[in-house]
Amino acid sequence: MTMSSGDDRLAWVAGFRSGVISPYEEIKLAEPRGFRDQTVRQPLLMAGGGERVRVRLTNRYGRAPLTIGAARVALRAAGGGIVPETEREVRFGGAAEVTIPAGGEIVADPAELAVAAGTHLMLSLYLPGETEPATYSHQPMEVAYVVPGDQAGAPDLPGAEQVPARFYVSGVDVHAPRGTAIAVAFGDSWFEGVGTTMSADRRSVDALNARLERGWVVNQGIAGNRLLVDEVGEHALARLERDALTVPGATHVLVNLGINDLGLPGMAGLPPATAGDLIGGFTELAGRVRAAGLTVLAATIGPFGGAIYPGISTPEGLAARREVNDWIRTGGAFDAVFDVAEAVADPGKPDFIRPGFDSGDGMHLNDAGARAMAGAVDLAHLKL
Image (cartoon, rainbow, N blue to C red; front, top):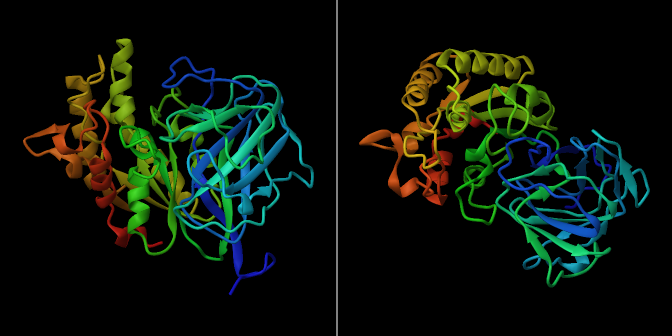
């Protein structure tokens, strides 16, 4: 039976999320860019589905207003193509065009398109004017398709430029059965998927969703993100409210952070965060999640002893990792722990990723490693 759009058995919950960063940050893992009289089409892998969709667009880090000349959604065909009969116009307060102020975000009107978990929703945005560098997701393990002019409704985009980033979108809500439980994967590249196959369905979060019988997990990983310090994205304690606690339908928060606090400072010749610093940050984070009435699960910090990047792997950072992991396992700050470090470490060299799980850079997981990470979560603690 299809439920009507006004059915009180339905509620808006997060079906897709994308952690965004500023294009003006000093450290960049991908080059930012702007647009002028171009259409940007982006596949969004839906963690969960519903009767209708509601797109969220963001100009959070923009320094000037952003005009969206047209927006459309559809189900994906092959590559940058769409299934034409599923195409729907996205409107904003009834209007086809909208201007988002600098620093602003907007929730579009509902679009009458049913989507299922595990399918790609294609979002096409026509950007008529010259934009500044875009608020973006820099390592989504997916590509955006960029073409000249207004081609938001085109069935296919032959010859499109393919850009490995995601622009101006922070999420999609779905109209799903009331009471649908949502977990938020809140963390860094080990959630966002760096090191996995470039298809956006091989990440640890996707592997975890494949294990669930009800509810789902939306991905708020940002590669390079830290618990304590702004650098690649706002630090986790600063973005916690926006990216986790206020996500519609959220009941659980899964945390995977700390590796960048311990490794990235070394690239600039600086000392890593101390174990005490991280324990203090994790304690605050856990307390805030619990105070919001949500359940918090934490991952132990994964091994990075074999990192190929200069300055990342230091004796001080690895020693702090071991100390913090002992505290995560035994300190009682979290409702549950998933021991990622144990699941993916080389048994003979526990500061290193197991060879069959290493993406090749000594710091990130391949597809098999991502599945092992997902397998470390005890579903009895998730209870979606």
